[in-house]
Amino acid sequence: MRLVLPALSALAFALACGGGGSSATPAPPAPSPSTCPITVAKTNPSFSADLVPAIQSSCGSTASSCHGGPSPTGHVSYSGTASQIRASLVNVAPANAPAGWLLVKPGDPAHSWIIEKVTKDQPGGSGYGTRMPQGAPNLCQPTVDTLSAWISAGAPDN
Image 1: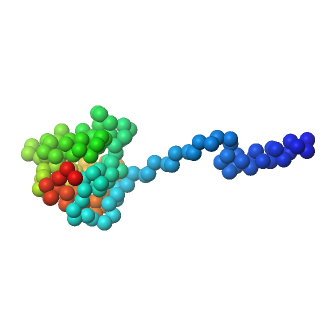
Image 2: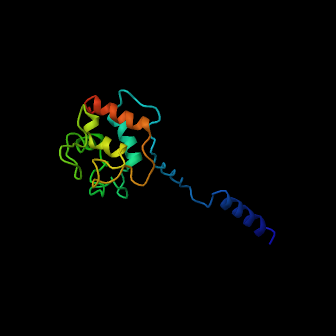
């Protein structure tokens, strides 16, 4: 009995501290989605380094998100490489928008549907959905300004 008590105490202590005999390190928690992934506007942003991570953290990139996976419910997927994502945005007509819009119209953020969707409560007028990201706070102004700067620069593949 004298040997059992210290062994049980050691086991209880190990389990209370997260031990348990497993040497596997638990994966860190996934970062929380953010509607302000770019806190200071960038005047010369990189699509791959600045915008893709911002878009994915705000709008999703996993199969369980609105804009993730091969058949996103949000009509546009932010999954894949930066070049694939850019190709799905630049000079592409949106699935649900008034005629004449492009998701990203290089050099023209005012006529880029992505800017309309993240800045207007009723983008394109009634009947074209709501402001994005849906059900979350509005994107912060530095993030919108950075996206606009990239579009104004011609939406380069950088």
